[in-house]
Length: 420
Image 1: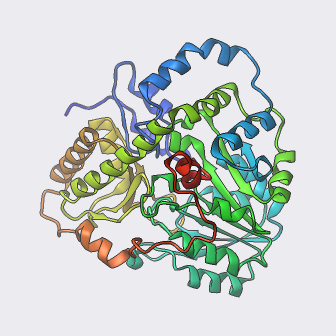
Image 2: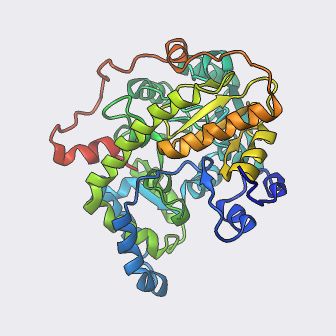
């Protein structure tokens, strides 16, 4: 394939991945970029929803939004949540920032690798960050009992887990997370970041949002942008008991949400079925993509319950070189994990995308292997064998502490409560 003309030096600036807009500007008009980097829902919003947004774009951009309290009440009503247990912000990272400033006093424990803001934010404000390293030999699965022991040994005052975890895609059963919350009820705070949990199909009701709001020190975070495929809007929310949620909500600016976010919140209840279908399609694509990635000799594919896969490249491959090659020669944007604590550039996180895009990705990776590493490499473990080694069965009925109604009409609120 001919080169795209993208100057790959843009990929080497800053600690985070280059933005889609940076790459698009570098590529020039007419260049097509397939994004395997940003973990976004490719099936939502639907084209019809985008048409509706476009139709109202003039008024959305021209007029002030409602204040954040009004938009939060609307979101709570749509999701069947008590408004006093919800604080809504300009993305989950804004909530992480305020949680750090207001609720983290001394120290914070976090497994690594994970979402970088959970380590970077408290370090920036001088807190002690107790990092619990996840092991590659265990498929980066988090053992909650060992983590609790670590927290006790370090005397951490705040504990965080991400479920589903980014970048490895591991999922913790709901009953285990609830037990974890109860074991640490004496801490200042326990945070469960559920930014990717809607993509999981391991359990019918995976979220611990309803359980957090009746506990003294628990917070659950949600990222609407990731689940709804609208990163550019920047909106997310947290669930906690009224005292914690109220403390955060009172600190947030009165107009911290924009009119586009308000419009989407009002659209959610009218497009519940489309959203559920988008998750079904994404689950199908995840299974297909896992099989396709196994075509690449030497590539280790880790089981995932997220909308992305963590892969380990063959020893002789360079993640940085592969990332640059895919952009320059195939117009494919990927995420190498060399700047993630607990990882190296031998690991890449690849977002789940439809089959045609995955075929293009696999062809690009095979092209890289042929051009630069023509000799055969050892076959990697299959996804199925990795699953047997690293996964637990989630077929067992979860020991829910809160009964949920079974009717289809309320299933969305129950499963997503807190949605995303």
